[in-house]
Structure formats: C-alpha cells, structure tokens
Length: 136
Image 1: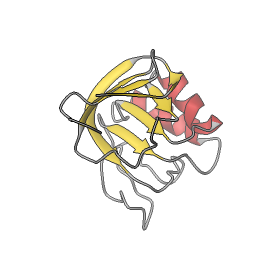
Image 2 (image 1 turned 135 degrees about the vertical axis):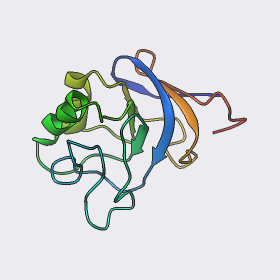
Image 3 (image 1 turned 180 degrees about the vertical axis):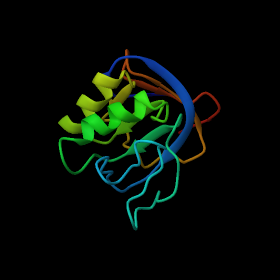
C-alpha cells in the first residue's frame, strides 16, 4: 500500500516504524551519542530511534534540535527516515542537512500507522510504502 504525503527531505529509506503521538524535542530529549529518547515521561523514553523510521506529530523546542539531528547522523544513530503530521522548520532543516528522508501530511494522517510495521519512506516522491500491509 502506498500512502501519499508531502516531500520534505529527499532520499529513500526503509526500516521498522516507531510511532508516537507525542512531539519530540531533539535538544535534551534525544541522546545524540546513542539515539535513545531520554525525555522524562515521553512515551518513547528509553527507546532507540537509530536506524528506525520515526513517526511523530511535530518537533518542539530549540532550533539547536536541527544540529542534534545532524549529530545523530554523524554518530550513526539517527533515524533512517522521519514522518511528521506537520513538519516545522527545526525538524525539516535537521532532516535536510543530515540527508535523512522525510515526509509529512500523509493522507489519512498518522493514526493508521502502528509501531513495528516494515515501511519505506520515499522522500523523493512524498510517499510511505507499506509493503506487507493490506491496509495501513
């Protein structure tokens, strides 16, 4: 199944989907050396985002978050791709400068997505491909 969205950062990447309905602050919310969510009380606290397709509604916090995403990439612990409900500048810039494929504004929103799904983000075409799902 292919779900249309909007391209934010070019590239194609596949991986296991990690989904949260809570915004993410990359500055102080994600350890740039490990890729583990460290924000206290966050639904993904203690979870590694390294090599995963990370879906979350939007980012929050400081503009330094873009550089934290870049640090994650340099440390080989960045997400393979990102999906937002509505991308904002901090996350979009972080994805672009880091070469992390990113899309947003999926048809039907994020509510039909489930953690653990194997997906591909096509940032070139603005699509989410769910190859093993009858319907996403």
